[in-house]
Length: 241
Image (tube, rainbow, N blue to C red):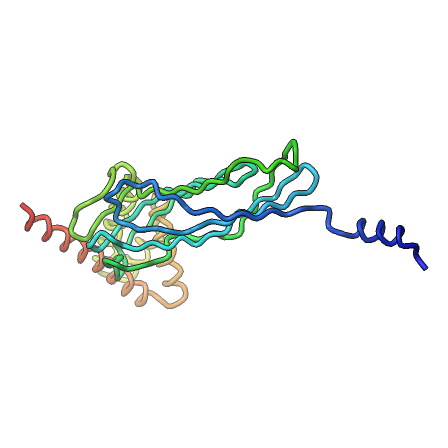
């Protein structure tokens, strides 16, 4: 029979050699008062401490509501988070519906961003220190509406708008291809912009899995969405003059 003291020592040695702390804080929206979005959510930080090492993770799902009264085509949001024991991550959230079927409608609620389970590991001097106050802030940097009006600084979306132009021009070339072999040659061309080229990777995969006819139909569809958005923006701009 194992003495009680020995049993306690054995139990202590078999327990996990780490402690865990969990804290939840609200996400602060630092956007200007006329921001097109309403976002009220929280983020939970979990720290697992083992010796002088901390494994930190965060869990969140940001839900936004379009309160602008207008359909949103393009959205850029900066979201920063920092747990109580160091680190910090800046998320560049971008959504461009220019080539898609739908925009973000007025009063529509949607998932803006969510965590994906990543873990950051830090070294700490004092594992018993509670650390700093955790922070989570976001700011709507730029928004483009279906009527052509905008919110924020256009420079915040410069890369997206440049990429959009490259994609639009290449879609026009593909849609105008008079023969399948010409279409396939253009589709296989790698664009200098990696971001723009990723857009066409989905079309290349579609062509491989479902054939050239399906890929051509998708090109025509996406180009039609872009032209529809352009027409709506130009019409709204003409009415405002």
